[in-house]
Each structure stands twice: as structure tokens, then as C-alpha cells.
Image: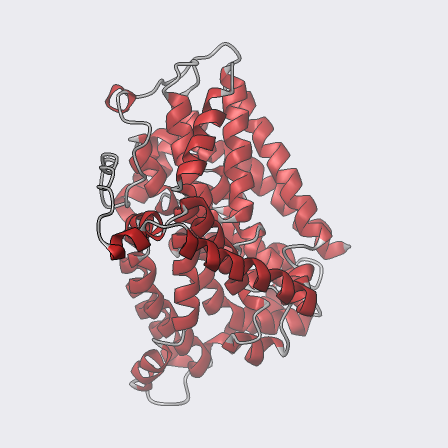
Length: 460
């Protein structure tokens, strides 16, 4: 039954779910159509609201691009590639390989989701090539657990990190004061749930793999690929060949580009600044900018030279075009919601639907359903925060609980959403339909666990 349901969802996604840019454009039309009847001004003013909001996500857009870029550069660094090769050589049984992949994928996603999606893809391909008898489809689905079940609870979580930033416009307008990460990402409830998900999802993945091997093996077209191939951008169906080593530097400019001392000076500056900031402001003051700076420093240190870092940044830059193109549309939708009065109406609906005890669970499922259509946890948060924050205040639910509920709900359908799996599948040379059956099992377990957790949070 699960396999038939998986095939049905895959056919639905393939046939009816268009590119995310098209979804963003359709969302604009939908919100405008719903907002027009509740406005007190002429409907043509919707275009004004849309245009006024279009560029309001500029700082956030750059922050999300840097999450992707810095995570890619760290995963693409030679020391990390060598570490992944050693990890891939460690498992001796199929189940050990699955367990390792699950732990690495979710562990790295807690640190940085950009790092996880690239490194997990590399690890899965290397393990798949070893011929351990591991089900390759399950291996790839397991490598997707980081993006599907963990990233929005960790250090690159969009909603909690932007909510802790006092410079964000929505923080001033809807919160009154920043919500520190000590109450969201680093709260005991969030950390305990993240640990529970890490353990439970790893055990589920291991149980799906037969003890003595079995299932689909690595496709022959992938078996001969170079271990050092870089992860390519989603639009390219196969990974590119390993880059040719650059010629020895001959000019003063080239020697400077290939010298490590300039990178080390920047790393030193970051190493001094970040601890000094934490000592001055505490962990509560940490925002997404500090996390991005930390990963930029890690990229500089691991690549050693500016030349290596820039080559990696050029490859990783191909992943950010979707963010640059789409986030203006999401910002425009947020402008319509705010100025048309529709956000206030939606807040009324949440207040009528939920109670103080059930509100976190309602937010989880609402966020999960919307995420399947708008797979952008950060941009979607900027749209939804207007009415979720108001409803939270009116129901007496702490804003931190609402933020964490949104974050976990945003991940609820990630594991069955093909959008963020594209880079992983490009390397694995599988289609989403190949892993959907396993992803559906993961979704059912994850949804039950997270729902129970937020029902408990609401009542306690």
C-alpha cells in the first residue's frame, strides 16, 4: 500500500507541481484574489502593495544565499572530501552504511543545511560504489533525512535565526523585541526533539535495510564516476568532471591568489570577532549573520588559498539563482498580506480554529501543508509571520513556541517534497520516484513523532 501511495504522490508531483518560480507567481495571484474582497481601497492598489514589498527581503535574500554558498564551500573543501572518503570506507555491513549516512546527513544539517545536502550526496555515492549490498535507493533517501527532518531545528534555521535579529523589519513590527536562539534553537524542548528525531529516524532507516543486503544496487552509469566529482547545480543532469589542477603560479598576482597567508589573516579576524561578540552579547545575540560568518571562516581555513575558495564559490554560486529570482515574489506577497488587511483576517481564523493548547500543533500542520506548495522555509516564514505572530499573542502562546512549531512544521513535508532533493538526485542519478517509497515511510514516522511532541508542548 505504501508503495502505491508513493507512486501516486510522485505522479502527482511530476504532473501538477511546477517549478518553484511558477509556484511563487501563482501564489501572488492567489493572495491578490483573496485579498481584493477584504480591502477597503480600490483593487488596483494591490499592485502598489506588491511593488512596495518586492525588495523588502533584500537582506534576508543575501543571508540565504550565503547559507547555501558557505555550506557548499565547506563541503567542497579538499579536507572534507578526504574525510567523507574515510567515512565511506568505514561501514562493513549494509545496515552500518545506512546508519552512518543517516547520522551524517542529520548531524550536518543541524550545523548547516547547505553543507548537509552536498556532503550527504557525496557520502551516499561513495558508499554505494563499495558494493556492500546496501539498497541504493534507501541509501539516497537516507541521505535526504538532513534536509527532510533536521535542518530547521539547527544552526542554519531560517525562522529562529531571523527572529533573533533586531534589524529585521518583522521583528520590530510583530514581535516588539527579538526572540533569542536560547529560547528556540537552543531551548531544551527543541534540542530534545532533535535528538529524538536523530535516533528514531536512524533506527527506522536501518530497519528498512535487510540485514544481509538486498534491494536496488548502484546504477551502472554511476559506478565508474570519479570519486572527486563535484556536486553540480540542479539544472545539470550529471556531475561535471573533476577540475583540472591549475598551473603553477608565475606572476605576483597569481602567487598572491595561491598563498594561504591572506586567507589565514581573514580566519584570524573571524576567530577574534565571533568569541568577542558572544562574550559581549551572549548566545542570545547570535543571528544568521554570525553563523554565516562562522562558515565563511571554515571555508577559508579548509580551502587554504583564495584561488581554491573562489573556484569552489563559482561552482556553489550556481545553487543560489533560484533564491535571487524568487524571493522578490515572496516579499511582494508579504506586502499584499500586510497592507490589504488579509493578514489580520488570517490571524482571526487561527484564533477561531485553535486554542492555547492546540495552537502549536495547528501551526505545525499548517506550515507543513503550505511547505509542500511553497518549499522555502525562510521566505515562507516572512509571509506567515504576520498572522501567526498576532494569533500567537492573542491566544497567549509564547512567540518562541510558535517559531519552533513553524520550523518543525516547515520540515514536515520536506521529506516528500522533490524540490530540495534535486542536487542530491543529480549526483545519485536517480529520480525522486525511486526514493519516494522510503521517503513516505520516513514522513509517516516523522509526522507522528513531531505531532505528539507539539501536542505535549501545547498542554505543558
